[in-house]
Image (cartoon, rainbow, N blue to C red):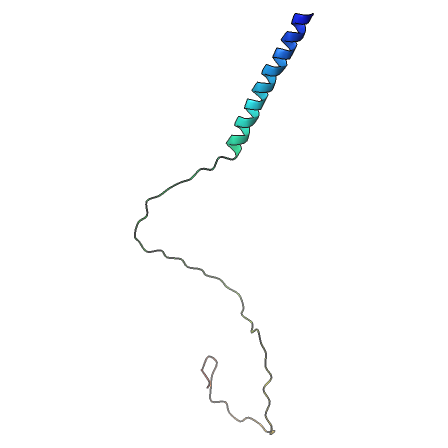
Length: 83
């Protein structure tokens, strides 16, 4: 009976060591980072972005005058710069 207990204890120790080694190996494989290196070269880097949509103003201002009247003509068109 004494030999049987020693064999069971030895088997448990071996299983524990194998389990610990398996745990460490499987844990280290998950955290492995792979790096890719490339030789730097001179060249032109072109980046472009296109989009569609509408643009709205962040601020709106109401402009009023101190006198009343009727505007007969406006001497500018859309897109003209007014100073």
